Image 1: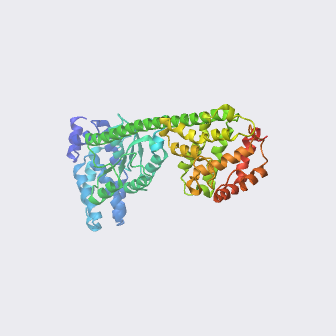
Image 2 (image 1 turned 135 degrees about the horizontal axis):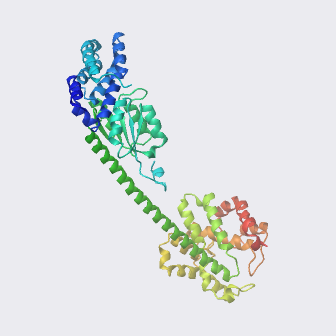
Image 3 (image 1 turned 120 degrees about the vertical axis):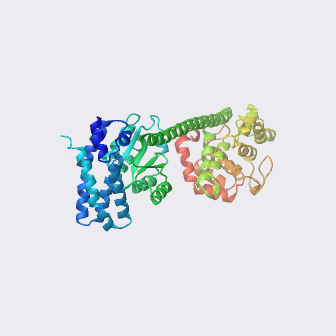
Amino acid sequence: MDTLRKETLTAAGIDVDNALERFMGKDDFLERMLKKFAADVNYQRLVEAVERQDAEAALQASHTMKGMCGNLSIMELSELFTRQVELFREEKPADAFAMMPEISRLYENVKEAIGAPEA
Amino acid sequence: MGHRIHSVAYRDPQTILIVDDDEINRGILDNIFADDYQVEEAENGRTGLEKILDTPEKYCAVLLDVMMPEMDGLETLRHLKHEELLDEIPVFLITAEANDAVMKEAYRMGVMDVISKPVIPYVVMRRINSVVELFRARRSLSNQVMAQQSELLRQAEQIIRLNRGMIEGLATAIEFRSAESGDHVRRIHDITRYMLKYTEWGEGMEDYDIEQIAQASIMHDIGKIAIPDAVLNKPGRLTPEEFEIMKTHTVQGEQLLEKIPELKENLAYEYAKDIARHHHERWDGRGYPDGLKGDEISPWAQIVSLADVYDALSCKRIYKDAFPREKVVEMIRDGSCGVFNPRLLDAFFSVEDEIAKMYDANGKEDAK
């Protein structure tokens, strides 16, 4: 992975070294999974579930996002999803829904840094 | 499961099954283990469970996510526990929610370990490899023990067969001296066994003891080896002196058995001694050699005496022809061959039809 690429990803809150360790040093594998993350439907599901105030569906999607972010070492976003899942579990859906603007902002950043999905 | 694992073509399981709905997570775990194992993936608990139930012997470890659609990790674990597979296949919970309640429930059900997500490759590798190794070692040890055990059992059975063969051989050799075929001892064995097994005469007896008594009955006339040919094979009636000699086959039989120390190991031994000595005693005390009366005679000696008389009457002997069945029954009932316990006679006549069939099947030559 070249330095520029690494800087871009790091700037979006991805701990690249930490992620690479999890992918056994295979950066093409990490790249593929990052693209998969950017194209994953769970973010859209979460947005829609929040729109119709469906706490259960939102929890499912948020939980999946949390797992993916953790695996890809997308640190800040991972922390946000962790907190959101906790809020749903504590049955505070309003507080969980209220996190969406912050989550969306970070998510879009990460998605942009990752770049276009593979052809 | 154990029996399936110990089949001849047994091979250690090599496959790790990853059950997780998150593709990235499956990919990461797959990548960690792909060098050392076969890896299979399932995207939810239900699919994973189906794979395991289909070929449980294939999997050396299962990595199970907790939160999944269709069937979650704990539910999958419950099914595996119910199928008693958790002792055979180590299951690891891989979870982001390592909260107390989930962990407690998982460990209670028998999960091998709980590993938190996101995974750290060298940690998850070490923890899973160690357990897979442990299971392999345990299985190989138990395979060895099983193999040794079945070899010992095979040898023991061989010895028992040899033992039985020698006892029967000895008894048959003695029968041959009195110009009878080996069928006599075989039938005494069968009648004794049948009576003890299927009539109230054998009430309260364990199957094991019945087999031992039947085995012992074969040796009832073993003392005849000490009786001179002139007496043993004399056609016609014996003189009183000759009869006295003939009677000693009972005591001599017991003494002979006592002189074979190896036989003492045999559990039929005590029965055999008692039967050899007392199979000519009679209920009214007029038998020999000890003139025992009534229940002083053991139940096994009593049944062998009756079987011996029934068989002798039913078959041709050097000193007599075979009697027809009705005559045999009549002679036993009226005490022509000595008095038997009325309870024993009741039990005997209740199944005499069945016993007579033994002669249709194998007694033709003797019964002519």
